[in-house]
Length: 290
View 1: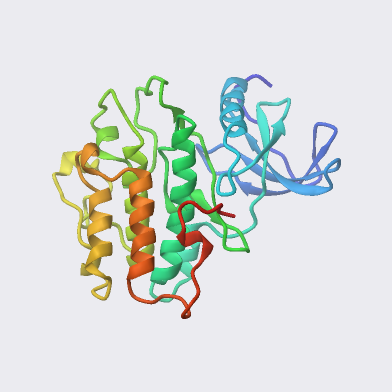
View 2: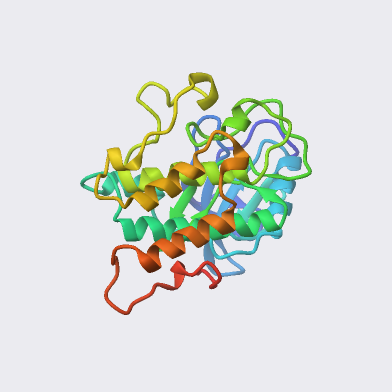
C-alpha cells in the first residue's frame, strides 16, 4: 500500500507473514492507526503504526533508526503496507497519570525525575540534528519501571529540513516562534514545550490564563503564570527556571544542557525529596538514563 485509505484491522488479522493483531491501541480520526501485534519471530508484542503514505512511514523509520535512546521509542522494522513496527510500551501516558492523581499533579520528586529523563532524550535528539516539536503529556508513555518514553514522531524534523506550511504540534505546548511561522526553529522550541510540561506535572494546570490556551501564545499577548500561584510551596528557584523555559524570545531560554544542569543542581541543593543519602541516578544529567 503506497498511500490513500488505511485498512482497518481486527484482532486475529495477519499483517504480513510475521505479525498477528492482538488489539487496537489508537484509532482516532486524523491519527495514524496503531495496533498491538504479536511478532511470531521475536516472540513478543510490538506496536504497529500505519501511515497515509509509504514516504511518511519511511521518513519516520529513518529518523527513529538514528535515535537509539532509552527514553525514545525503539524501531524494530519497516512493514510492507506503509507501516512500521516499534516498541510497545505498556503503561499510561503522562496525561492519564495526571488524571489518576487526587490533586491532578505529581510529587516534585517524580515530576523532576520524569522531566530529566525526557530532557535527556531531547538533548540526545538535538545532538543528532532532530527537533521533536510535539511534546505533550499525551506523547509520553510511562513504562512499569517508571521509564518515560517519547512516542509519536510525526511532527519531528531535522534541523536542516524546510518547515511545513502549517503549524504541527499540540496546543499549548507549541513555542511562540512556531506560531509566528518564523523561518528558523531551533532546539529552543523543545525547551519551551518541556517547560510547559514540567509546569503541568507540578501543578496539574497549564501556564497560561484560562481562555488563552486554544490560541497561539504570541497572538494573545499573554505571559505565562507562575507555578507558585498554583503550588505556593514550590521553591522560587524552580519557578524561575520554569519561567526561563517559557520566555517568548527563544534566545532567552536556557539550552537543554543548561536546563538539565539547573534541575540537577536544584535536586542536589534544594529541599530533600528522597531519603537521606539517596541520590537518584536520573538526577545526574551525565549518567545513562534507563
